[in-house]
Image (cartoon, rainbow, N blue to C red; front, side, top):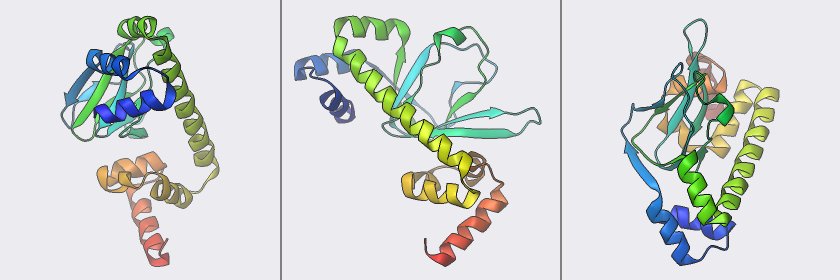
Length: 195
């Protein structure tokens, strides 16, 4: 696990190995069991962020009809974005649920600010990581909006194949914006065509 974090610090900063180890030692790393909520829709938002070292976290909301709508899955080496300071104290519009047992780096604004003051390059690293994540999310959203359900599934197959076997199929279908039955038909068609 330390290697994942040290890799990011080496790739995005000029922080010395000694400083990297000091940063790692001051991080909060927690284990969460499958089924644990990090945040529930309708709860007061707090300013927290997570970085997935191991496991899978699902982001979803329950719509007006009572249906769960999956909007994202966060897996290894992905940040679960910090909730904006403007929304602190507001009710959360989504839930974050551990789909698997997870090991997460847990951050909050106070501890981050302390770390940023002590290690200014760390803030630059986080900013670069968030810029990359935002760019990827914008690209994925653009592709999602303009593609058919079958194309969306093929994108998951090529870009995030681990999701296929790691998450329940009804959640994957929700993420793709289709019914589980439609997902089953798409999978059969693709299997026949040997995608």
